[in-house]
Structure formats: structure tokens, C-alpha cells
Amino acid sequence: MTEKRTRSMLALLAVGIVAAALVVMVADRRSQTAADRELSWWSAAVLDLSVPLQKLLSMPFDAVGEAWSRYLALVGVVQENRDLRSDLARLDDENVQLREALLAGGRLEQISRMRDEFEIPMLPAEIVAEDVSSWFRAVLLGRGRAHGITAGMPVISEDGVVGLVTTTSLNAAKVKLLLDRQSAADGVVQRSRLRGIVRGAGSGERLAFEFVARGGDLELGDEILSSGLGGVYPKGLRIGKVVALPEPGPQLLARATLEPAVDFSKLEQVFVMLRRSATLELLYASDDGDRPDSEP
Amino acid sequence: MLLLGVLAPVLQGALQLYLPVSLCPQLGVLVVLGLGLVWPNALGGMLVAALVGFMSDLLSGSLGGQLVLLHLGAYLAARYASGHLDLGGPLSTAIFAVGFTALYGLALVLSTLFFLPEAGLGWGDLQVLLPVALLNGLFAPWMVGLVERLLARLEAPQLGRRRVFLGPQGSPQ
Image 1 (cartoon, one colour):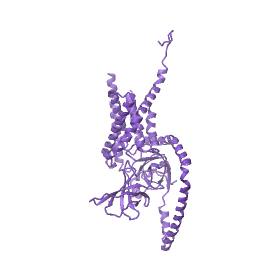
Image 2: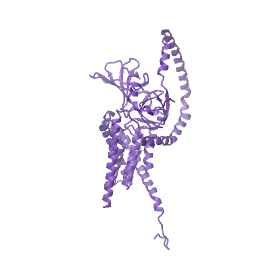
Image 3: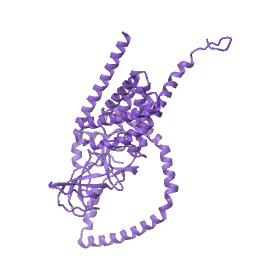
Image 4: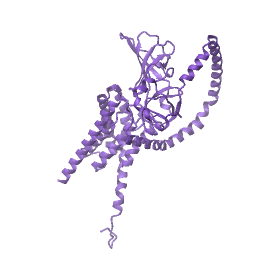
């Protein structure tokens, strides 16, 4: 009799957990399109607690990595330094020539004014963990709402676009990488200004450049930048390089493959752009209460 | 056991910073497998499995609750299998873990297709499963052993308090 009762209690518990999980899933599914995407207080608290734990567990790996980069990776530094000096000299020359050209056109002052207008404050943040599932691509940052980060803020590295903040807690933020299939960015070919949508390929380390007009001017090695038109990422950020051209076919729109500008496997530190675009301001309007008045 | 449930996904998240996906065992899934195979306490097992799922949900881009559901299902499957299959040896545990991981991955893809079709997961994504399943198979006997040892240690204090009387010949009475 007791065993039967225990069995029914266990079955009830299993059904309860399944029902709760389903409710959370449906709620989360609905919030994908709604403004309120903040975590519940208990989830946020657990996430905050997991950040120092992640850092602690990463310490031995970090120590090994640092030793490697300090002692063993120094082998190529002399040559790299030589190359960088030569690049710097070349870029200096180019810069002078471009300034001259702009001054001649009377546009330098105008551009300088525009730059002040568009300059976005950025916050450096360390990646403390990667997605534990093999099919989704997200990372966890060791900074959150307490540092001015809210959902909808773009995340970049020195190489280009990394992703978008999707959820935050006080001291952590989850970032959906551009590699994730649910990510998308409006891209433009730097050389020919051909436009398309960049989407993540999921498990691989490649991006898809979709909805490109067939027969458009696209070549291998073309650089793709953010166009700023999607209302998510600011204009002019590097996204990737074309590594495979569209297959020939009768369709009007084609799909090319990109190698991301950012090496996601070696990503350690990123920058969160502490300003959302107008589109995302509208979408995440309810988060405004979380944003600090003054940006760090 | 709760601590193990919290630590496994956290450690996996930290490990994946340094290792590619195909070289990182799914520690959370392996803990759940270990619990299902060796822990007789079904109530505790279900709660720890749900906790592993909850932590994994927090550290993943999946839908909230999705990994709770899958880890609970995985635990119940492992528990059912432990009662019907002979999974005593390391080889049988490893082989079972390979199939177990494949089923877990399949369930994840199917549930994502159903609840989040715009995630765009397809059958082609199942190819990630093979290296992960093999790696899980390799690590499963160790993880099951770890869970077994932890359980023995947790139960040891009670055993240690039991009084033992020695007879005249030195044999326990």
C-alpha cells in the first residue's frame, strides 16, 4: 500500500515538473516576440551566483592559456612586429591622402561633427561561459544590469559583430551569437553595396548571406559589413568575408556562405554597445526602468 | 547531489570556452545518466535531474524549461533502463551512453522543431551528435563511477555510526 502511494507521489511529481517545464517553455516562446524578456528573480539570482563559480572553474584553464601565450606564442612576435610596423606606415600614408581628399572636398569638418553624434559608449565584458547545448550558440558575460547592460544591446569585438544581448541579470548577460540560427543582421557588400541578410548557420562556424539578388555583384573574398538598416547593429561593423558563392539556379534570390570576421572559438573579451537602436528601443521599451541614468 | 547537479552544467559551460563542441562531453547529461543508473532514490533523482536541466537552460540559448523537460525524460529513461538491462560493466555503460546521448539529441532537435521552428534546426544538425555521443560513451563509465562513489560517501557516515561488537575470536557478532 505504502509502495503504491510512493509510486503515485513520484508520478505526480514527474507530471508536475513536466507541466511546469511546458508552461515555462510556452511563456518563453511567447516572450521571444514580446518586450519583456528579463529573467525571473530566482533565475537571475542563480545566474548571478553561477558567474563567480564559472570564473573559479575557468582559472586553471586560464592559467595554462596565459602561460602558453606568454612563453610559447612569443616565437612569431618579432616578425609580427615587423609586419605591423610596415602596415602602420602604409596606413599612415593612406590616412594622410584621404584627409587631403576630404579637406579638398570640404567634408572633413562635417564628418567630424557626425562622428561625435554617432559615437556609442562601449563597455568591455569578459565571456565566462559558453552554451552548454550543442545546437544553440550563446555566451554568458560576467557583467549585467548593474553595469548598464540591457537586452537588445549589440555586442562586438575588435574584429566585428559578435551578437546581441538577449537576457540579463544583475551581474550577468546572455548573448545570442551571430552564429545562432535565430540571429540575423542586415548586411551589405563593402565593394558593390549589394544587400542581403546574414544569418547564423547554427552548429558550424559559418554564416549564411541570404536573400541576395541573383546575378548581383558578389565575389569571393568580398567583405560584408552591417548596413545599419536592420535596426539592430549600427552601420559599418565587419560581419564576415564571402567564402562560397551562390549555387547557380533559377531562383531570384541567392545564398552565399561567409566566414565570420570574428573568430568565435577564440573569443574571450567583447564590448557591449551601451545604446540600442531606435527599433530595439521600441521593442524593449519596458526595460527602460533597468537602465541607469548615467552610463559608465 | 544537488551540488553535483549545479556544478556539472557550470563546469561544462566553462570547459566549452576552451574546447570545441565536439570535444566536450555533456556533463549534465552524464550526471543524469549516472543518477538514473545507480541512485535508488527516485524522488532525489528527479529533483536533481530537473535542477541540472534548469541550470542548463540558464546557460543555454534554448527555450526556458526545454532542458528541464529533456533532462527529466533522460533520467526516467535511464532509470527504466537500469531496471531492465544489465548495465553493470563499463563497456555496457559506454554503449548505453552512446545510444542514450543520440536519443537525447534527437529529442532536443524534435522539441526545438516543435516549439521553436524559426531556430531552423534540421536533420542535418544531427551530425553533431556522433562525436558528442562517442565522447559521452567514453566518459560515461567514469561519471557513473563518480556518482556511485559520491553516493557511497554520502551514505557512509550512517554506516560508520553502526556499532560493531567483536567476539572472543575477533570475529564480528
